[in-house]
Length: 438
Ligand SMILES: [Zn+2]
Ligand SMILES: [Zn+2]
Image (cartoon, rainbow, N blue to C red; front, side, top):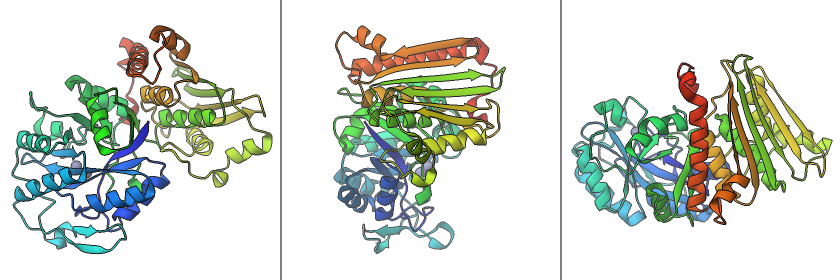
């Protein structure tokens, strides 16, 4: 499993900050615990190779990409299997860009190397549209061996639905991107599922602090750009497990706490999410049979100053979850003892204005199972009078020996969570306000 921010601009983009040079992007990605980023500058790929070198030196991945603006002013992210393909597509895009940049109004378009040295400036009007139609752009991307992804499909400006009102039938898109403005599950259901395509997400970062704001989790054999393409296409047992906003979504907090549990030696993790709107209560419980902590270690675990930023793309552990709970009129309790596991219980006022969005629980389950197929997970989500459970015991029995991390295992777990979540939404759920309306 790898976690990638699949949409990051560099200082080459006229709207990108000057400190978004290749080395800084890679440093920030590593600090966020990401396995890598996709470099998607507007209509150009001049900084792809330098970011690739910086990433390789840091042991992470920079997927070559270009965010192409079509003549309809739709943004399409092209992800390429290697730097040569990105270079070839870059040359094609350059020939379709009519204008010259004026740095005054639009900003500098800095070509930089991995040592933050300025090598030059891209002279084209990268902020403008190419002369390619949407269909032509998708065709050009495919000819270069890349994947065509409808960028920030949930956004009005430059999103495919926002610009055109619909997705043209027969357009050979490979995936749909949900921006960090929308919950991943909601965006996937609205924009990707109807097309039968995978949903991905990325931060669309133009400044270093925005990197990692949205993350896509991919199940693949090794971290390289070609494998990322196979996962997005869903071929050869590779797949997109999901996505989320690590600092924001409660689903990402749950994933973080559960992964901490497994790293603390747990072989069994129980997760309960209980939503009681009538009582204005949301309770999240993560209990494990891991090593546990003595009192001193437990209070250190709750202290943000003692928590080094993790090696994963998800959260800062307990301090961040405590902050989220207290900001929403709730609290966090930790019960732990050496050898007796740990139980984390967070409560929130369900309707509190500052209550974090739930995010995509399907992603939480799938990333946990694909990362730790041998851990026993008991998962329950209750909402109002409804409830569903997913247990690895049941899933393994149904799989008859296949791993939970196999394509069949992931498909089965995905179906179980989807069915359960759909049941909770139900007809009565339709009138409830959507998580991300806030
Ligand atoms: Zn865009
Ligand atoms: Zn962008």
